[in-house]
Image 1 (cartoon, rainbow, N blue to C red):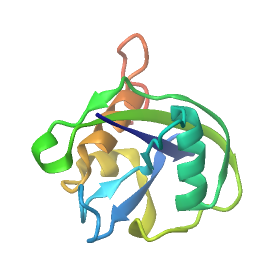
Image 2: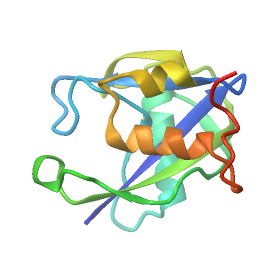
Image 3: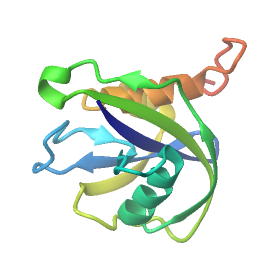
Length: 144
């Protein structure tokens, strides 16, 4: 099973960065998604996260923590056998830019709008929903 990491960049407590996946992507083309990618052989999850965000957004991640329980892709027939590991990116240096051909555009969305997108990948939705609920089960970041 492939291991995939994804980073949740949230600013102002209510805006999340998403990328629109390019048409050449095998999984979830033309869907909004978080940033990240496959863990390479011999690489740890956290190393992969830092590398992927540097490659895709041209930022250096300096602090992060797990954001959601690991998630197995719900459609392995279409997307392959994958487990997604989501991290909340708490700090980074550099200016966020679309630095690769993985996404045709990037944009900041209010969390509520991101969750309302029909074309949001399952792993991104999973990570955002987990971020919205704290350890006690109270919704902490959704709604007014």
